Image 1 (tube, protein in one colour):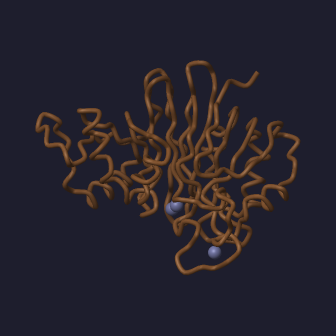
Image 2 (cartoon, protein in one colour):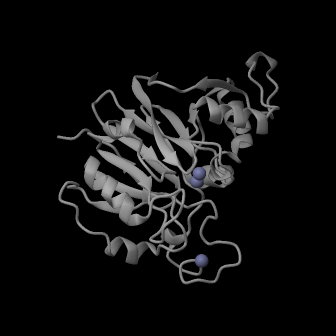
Length: 268
Ligand SMILES: [Zn+2]
Ligand SMILES: [Zn+2]
Ligand SMILES: [Zn+2]
């Protein structure tokens, strides 16, 4: 499996409108963060995780020219507002694109984008054509297993995604969380790579701080970990240099950045 990080920023993005702080005015391209999402290559197929408001720009920047399935973590605006861009991908695929999400997320997306098509026989391209798949248990995606990982995100639940490849490689993508429900801890063990919300250092009601994220990473002990969904509080270079070495995470903890590619291979 190969993960292409399309965006690594929080809901404001970085730079933030009207902010002249050192990170928002930085010349380090790793400090330019579109809203958090990823494209995951599963063999010759591509799973898109979340449809951010910048999906079109992200797809162009990454050379993303196909999407074979979509998984949505939750219905906050920074994760769904690019859903209409799926019109181009369903046009390219000439079929309905399967969309996987928790039932509550699907019902919100269905309400916001109530014009999308589900019947591909209309050939009414110019409108997204999708097939809705409520995700409440693991499903098979071309020989890979997609497992929903419930996450606490303030009053609501968000969904993280674990992917297990046919070669035994495993990754998880957990974009928005402030807690790990008791039943989700085991779903985050045995990973080669964990991508997880590491918003900023100051406490936040619905997101982990960097220190809280490091505690989760230390506990579940992936081989490598990357922080995602970061605000302008975190300068890439200085934050990464200040991250502690975790003995249980041999490959280290890094900050993700837009355009980062991570190959996920089985733990030896
Ligand atoms: Zn978010
Ligand atoms: Zn700023
Ligand atoms: Zn959210």
